[in-house]
Length: 84
Image 1 (cartoon, helix red, strand yellow):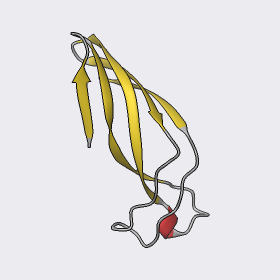
Image 2 (tube, rainbow, N blue to C red; image 1 turned 120 degrees about the vertical axis):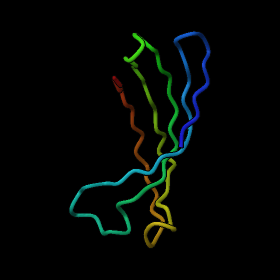
Image 3 (cartoon, one colour; image 1 turned 90 degrees about the vertical axis):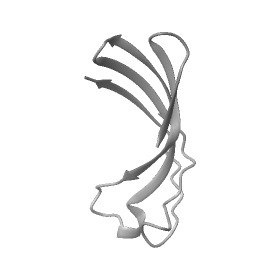
């Protein structure tokens, strides 16, 4: 779930939570699903072309509702997305 707030006609901020699934085979199944916070900014380049820069701080934990136990994720990550 994400919230968009338009600052101008073509610039917006993004914030919300997301579920992330880690595909590394060495992890136990309960450590693969994490709920993370996501913050970012976006720009509408053309009517159907968006560029987004995101940041996920390393404060997420695994979702106890999805799999068995909480796991602390200390990795910060950045993303650059193009949507069209």
